Length: 116
Length: 108
Image (cartoon, rainbow over all chains, first blue to last red; front, top):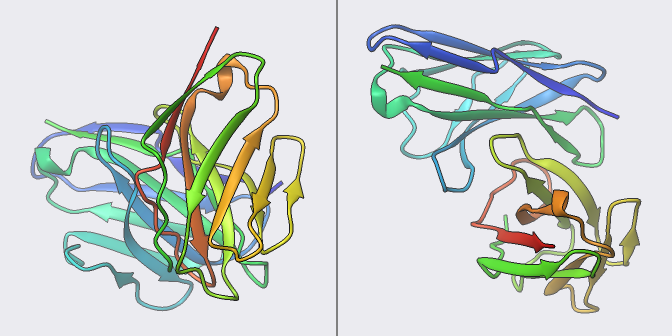
């Protein structure tokens, strides 16, 4: 089956630093990748949709200058949290849609970010 | 994407069938019903999806009403490892919008 990986699985950083999270589709090409954020005991909230080779589309209320998304290839999208602060601590999850598929989306295992 | 409504929590005895309902009364004709589950601190796991016919796979069965305004996910023999948050999503092309889901607790 289709596998999506994320790296790192967890990261702890100091306030003010930037953190990059990678999302890879391992055995399929993904024209579209989605980034979600999940706070404790809450549901997943979509942050942005990224299409390979074009700018990401951000959901209302998500700062595009703070959460930089790059989707440079059909198998890799990155989310960079710039100048992270403790309120950015969350579980970040990506999903990838198969190019030409039946709207299938496969989710990564998530990245736990803790900002001290 | 259509909004879905699910009960916040359900309990089920181990070995019994778990029936999880979902209402999606504003579903469009080209939108599929997807079910995912999320075990604590993991990414969502795909379970099953369907358009209008009932579907079955090795994990579960999906029953969609004839008017497509609601569906039920059935775990035929629930185990303790099925304890998770179950999300019903209606999706055409594009993004998945998650509601609050149903927390299923399987009890011994």
